[in-house]
Length: 440
Ligand code: G6P
Ligand code: MN
Picture 1 (cartoon, helix red, strand yellow):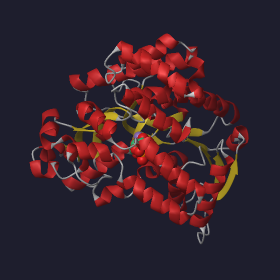
Picture 2 (cartoon, helix red, strand yellow):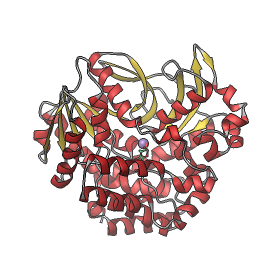
Picture 3 (tube, protein in one colour):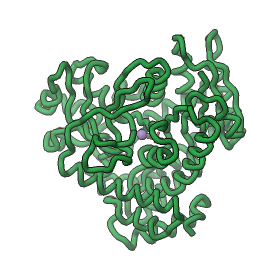
């Protein structure tokens, strides 16, 4: 099996590699090709992987290239984990929005729209190369904003592209632990869009265990989402929202906390990673990762008085475990259920069939098929349809180069509160990002 990683010089690549090193079964990945536009980053990550593989006899063979077609040729799986504009771009996304007084965040609100506007054209051209050079490959998209980017790629690749995110996994793991349920046997009734979903039930042997958690204020206050949102709000919702909904439900507090922070998350990560890529090694990678995990959503947790992250949540494992489980299920037809970003079909009747949604799917050799979930309550329908409408304007702008569509994308987003702000945001982003030259 050959796996190609697009964005192969990225900081999280050693996590994927580490997961592969633990897979010794028949049909595992034996060849990994790293592709990146930056040869220096490829060399840095290649060195970390070599150190990590030391002493593992059946470690996959790793090669690296800056030639996309060469990377894709013969791939059974392709992971897409690119960051158009790098962390400097992310920092600018955050900064520009915060200067307008609206949320500046990697994937949510104005920042996410800006990130989508510059990523979608690149993701689509990558998808076209895959369709040409490796038409049978399964594509696993990690590139954020993951739901939107997966939808853009699905217009080229159909159901061969599947988007993944670690946040529903983390949420499911925490809730299952609290309920004392085996996470492998519990069905998570989770639905929405990427970074915009709600856990509505946890079914074990046909019985919904979530009401038991919602009725227990002490348990509710003891885990990440409970501390971020407060037990009372979870009970009001009758569901556990994805942690990213903190940016919606406590928008004012989040924006304030972000504006007051010494630097944005992107700016912090940029500095942190410059140091790592300056002298890369497995040891510095590990230390850098630990610091990154410990400070994840720190400003939100501070605004909510949520305290430190729990020990068990610091251990990364979400992304690469989902990706590995997905590859295994497809390659060996081992049927499994995972929460993934796929085309809706008829799963959420408020959206059309081609809208990419984040829902539990059964995965096997034929790909991922969404399972039925409880219908979304009206408040969730409101957010999901509004955000999907904004995403659709991003796709329209990326396809046509229309400024009008790009302004609409910002203006229709529920976290942008004025059309004038939307217009100024677009101007400022176009100014910042060379990749948005197509909208100038
Ligand atoms: C979670 C999300 C990812 C996101 C990441 C940001 O893992 O699911 O989509 O990219 O957080 O973390 P960072 O450390 O980059 O702020
Ligand atoms: Mn995610």
